[in-house]
Length: 341
Image (cartoon, rainbow, N blue to C red):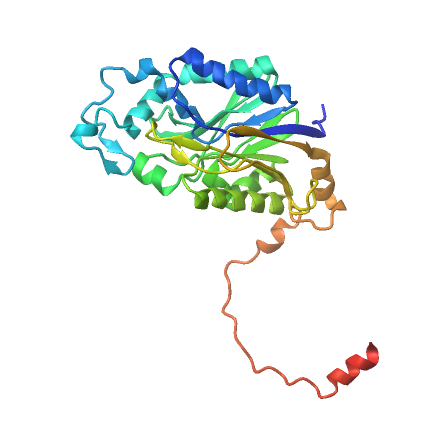
C-alpha cells in the first residue's frame, strides 16, 4: 500500500515533573497524547530524556539502596557526604530507569494503540545486553509494535560524565507515512545521520532534544533547519522546557518546539512551518504535505539539494588557494556598458 500523502504532527514542549505514582504518571501522559490525537495528530514527539520522569516515582526513590557509597556523582561533580541522601545522582537515576523499563514500554504501547497514533517517547538511558549504556528513544506504533533508535553521537557530558556510548545503527522505521528517521538532539548537528535516513526514503526526521541553555537549543534548531534544507525533508524538533532540578539528568531546560522544511515547502518562505513560544508546556502542530517532498526531490522544485548531494562528495580535501595580481579594468569598460545598456 502506498504511503499516505500527508500527516499532522505534534511536537511537545514538555516539562518533566515528579510523580507520586505510576498511575499519576500514566494519567499525565494519557492527557498529553489524548490532546494531540484529538487534534488530529498522527505522529507525536516527546523530547530527549522526558522518560526520566519515571525515576521520580516515590516507591522507587524510597528503595533502601538509593544512596549506596559508590553512587557519589552529581553530574561532573562529587556529591558531599552531607548531601548524598538528598541530591539526585546519575548512577541512581540510571539504575532506577532500568527497574521501570517494562512499565515505561507498556504505558507508551498502550497509549499508542488506544489513541491510534505513532509516539516517539522521551528518550532514556538503557543498558543493552552487553551492559553498554545508550541514550535510547523508543518509537511506538498504533499496531502495538515498538522500535528504537540509539543516539549516534553522545555529547561530551554524556560520554565523559555519564558513560553513554553512541549507537551502532542509523535506522528508519516504516510507517503508513513512509519511512521515518530519528536524530536525537546532538545527532541532528551532523549531516550524515539524517542524510542516510533521507537516502533510505525518510521524508520526516524526528529530533527530540534536551538543552540546558538557549545556546544549546539554537544549535539543535540550526542543525534541524540545515538537515531540512539539504535533504528536502521535514524535521520535527521537540524540546524539554522548565525546571526539573529534582532530576540528576534533566535540570533546567530551555527551548521551543519547531517544525521545519526547506524554504520550498510549507506556508512560510523561511522554511519554519510552525514554531512554539519559548519555554511554555504545550503541543505545536503542523500539517505536512508529504507528496510535496516527493515532487521537489524529483526535480519539480527550483532547487534539488537532495538529488545533488553527491556532487560535492568527490573532493578529498580543500586545496591551498593563491592570489594573483588583479588585471586592470579596460579604460573602455564603462563606455561599453553604457552603449550596451
